[in-house]
Length: 463
Image: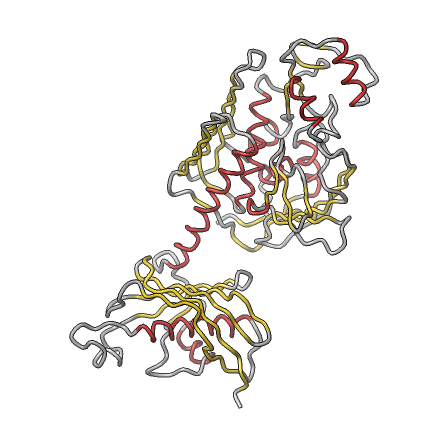
C-alpha cells in the first residue's frame, strides 16, 4: 500500500488574489495523516479551520470559494490542483487574507514552492475512493456532461467547446498524474474571453486581474474606447496589442492550453471530494459550478461506500477489540453480554462498528416465539447500547462510571433477526455533555438495515 504524504517543511508565497485584488501570503505547513487539506485565515482571530470539502463551498462565480461562519477563502482550485498533482495528501494552508495569489493564472508557482518544501511519507496508508458504480452528472442548460467510470488509477479527460470561432473545440487529458502533471498541466493558465471582461469587472470580480494573470481571447471587435477603458481599469501603462486573437500578444504554452487549464481546474475542484480518487473522469464543457455539483455526487457515493465497507465483515476483517478485552471493559456477562467483537473505531468521527453473532443457542430463543425463533427487539437495542458503551469507554475517561440507557427518541425494527444472522452495529456518538450521551445507531444483517434508533444514556458513579 502507498503511504500518505505531507510536505517536509513550511514554505510561503505572496501575491495578489485574482478576484478580490487583495495581497495575500499563503503558507503551506506539514500536516498529520488523514488531515487532507485545510485552510486557515490568520488575519481573523480564532479562525476555525476551513476543510477543503465540497460541503463548505459557498460560491462558484468564476472560481471555487470555501467558507465557514461567514469566513471565506476564494479561488482555491489552483492551490488544490498543485497538491493533488504532486501527490501531497495532507497540508495546512494559512492565508493572511481571503484569496490565494493568482500569479500567472496557473498552478506552477505553487508546484515550485511545494517541490522546494519537499514531500515526506507518513506512517498511514493512503485511503482511496475507488469508484465502483458509474456516476453521471448532466446540466442541459449549460450543455455539460460529466461521468466517472471505475478504474484502478486516476485519469481526467476534458473537452471544451464554447461555440466560438476564435477558440473552437479542444480536448486534453492527464493519464499519469505523477509523470504528466508538473510539465504538461501545472503551467496551463486561466483564460477568459474579451467580451466577458466588463461583465466580470462590474460583478465585482477580477479586481486583481491583469494581462499577465490570464489569457484573454479576443472574440469581438475592440475599439479605441475599449482599449482606453481596459487600460484605466487595470492600470495598464504599455500599449495593448492583439496577436493571433489573444490580447497583448500572449504566447500560448501549449496549442490547447485552455483545455489543459480546464483539466487543472477539474483536478482542483475534485480534491473537494476529500479523498484521493481512483476513476476515469470524462467531462464535456465543465466549469466550476458543474465541477462542484459533480464532486457532491462523488462524495455522496464515497460516504455511502465508506459505510458499506466498514459494516461488511468480508471487507472489514480486522478485530479492534476482541471478546476478552470486551469483558475487561464492560460489566455485562452471560446471558446479557451481546457483543462479540469490535471491528472499527474512529474517535474523530465518533463511530464504532460491533458484531453480534446470533445462534440458536441464545438463551432467549426457547421462550421467545419458540416455534419461530426471533431475536427480541429489546435485546437488539441492548446490544446496540453495549456497542455504544464500548465507544464511550474507548474515547473518554469513564473510570468508576457505569452507563445506563436514559431514553429512546426513536426505535424502528425493519426486519426480523433469526438464528444464523450476524448483526453488524454501526453506532455514532452524536453529543456528550455533562455526563449525558446521545447516540444514533443502525443494525445491519447482510448490508440490509434491520433496526435503527436514536437514544440517550447517562454516565453515573458506580457507587
